Amino acid sequence: DSRGLLLFTQNGTMVDRLTEPGGCEKTYEVEIRGRISDNDLARVLQGVSTSIGTLKVHRINKKREVGPKTHLEVVLLEGKNRHLRRIFHALKDPKFHTPLKVLDLKRIQIGPLTLDIPVGAWRFSTPDEETQLLAIFKTPIHRG
Image (spheres, rainbow, N blue to C red):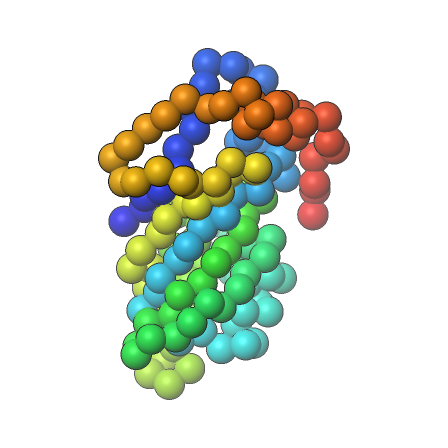
């Protein structure tokens, strides 16, 4: 299932900017069952047809393949419900022709903030992190 970095705030402007499409990069470590071809890596960047329309990622990097599993790092500029799960399910393992399945999904970064604490722990943001987040609001939203 999904896990990783969560950001809680009562600042409505920050919520809007962090959740608006193109407003903030979110980086994930993704483990999938199956192998993903280089052609499918390119397709994911261009857009994959799913049951809710065409979905794509901003960047994708194949980290390693271990047995029947592939480990990826994926950056989204927007995230619809089950975005990554839908994309990979629409693709097929090139050898077995079965849909790819997300086995683990971990958000490791939101904008300039990175996951740096153990599972189950929490902490307040530092003044420097808040300054970095506020800087996001001063940059134009990336649309595309």
